[in-house]
Image (cartoon, rainbow, N blue to C red; front, side, top):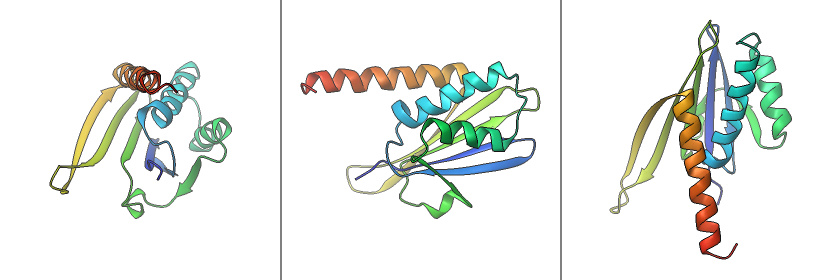
Amino acid sequence: MGTRATITITHHGKSLHLYRHLDGHLCSTGHDLATFADKWKELKGEGSLAEIKADLFGRNPKSYEVIEDPKQHGDRAFHYTLAISPKGSIRTQVTTWDFYPNGERYRRNQVYTIAKFRQAVAEDIRLVRRNMQAYGM
């Protein structure tokens, strides 16, 4: 079963919503978004949502799907929000859903500067690598 994620990127008052059926964790989708943010910073925020979409699809053409509303995917484990300011700075928010031991679902929001988001992604990648080594993968 895949780890599903939705993404909302806002820029100049417009939004782009994406869905990813597999690899929604920080170490994959988060990594794609952090890499995108680095490129966006190099462009100094000059660009459009069409360019954002082209960049993400160019990185993983079969991984992302444009959607109308992230809420249509209630089975998602992650929702990433990237808000790009008119000056080009990026604020990120990661919403995760998980289950308590009793089976009840809960939600957690974390807001990051882009630098803190990159740190969280790097930490998740380290944990995944450590776990893979522990299991001989």
